Length: 201
Ligand SMILES: [Fe+2]
Ligand SMILES: [Fe+2]
Image 1: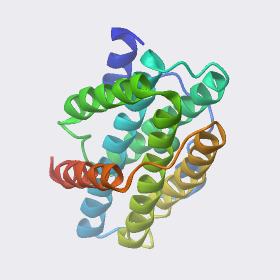
Image 2: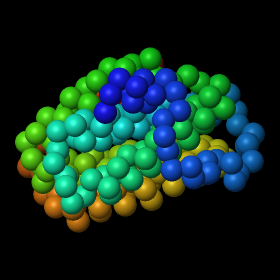
Image 3: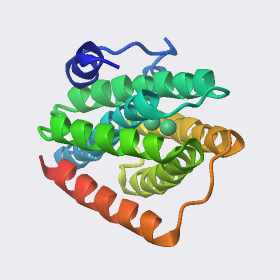
């Protein structure tokens, strides 16, 4: 983790797995202005979430030992970069902009990831698993809210859903533990603030 990595997450094209963008398999749908605006906002929220996911993994990699599972966590981080790129592509195609608050999400999540890694691997892996669970709940909500016609955005979110479920499973299999209820509650609260803010700015 270094400054270069941070800047690439925020501004550029970070290293990813090279999988094709799921949106490419679908034609651009006819959307009303209202549907297009809503899609762009939801995809901005998802993009901001992926900036955070990326920062979380980078923070964790800084401090966690993760000897047995480092490769698998790095693979997950690469897949988060696919998500980051796909969401950005979609936000731009819909005529939107990514969240102006991304640097704040990035710094906050980097710190949280690093602290979780310091507390201990089983907790930081549990934290990843819980994060992914909450992300999946958001994705499901977004799949409900997106226009049925916006098959490009839907394809991106559906592939992300598959990947996030896998990341959560890997984290638990790697020794993650269930977090205490109040911690989960606090995480939910923070993510609510984030998603509300990123929806608008
Ligand atoms: Fe992701
Ligand atoms: Fe993930």
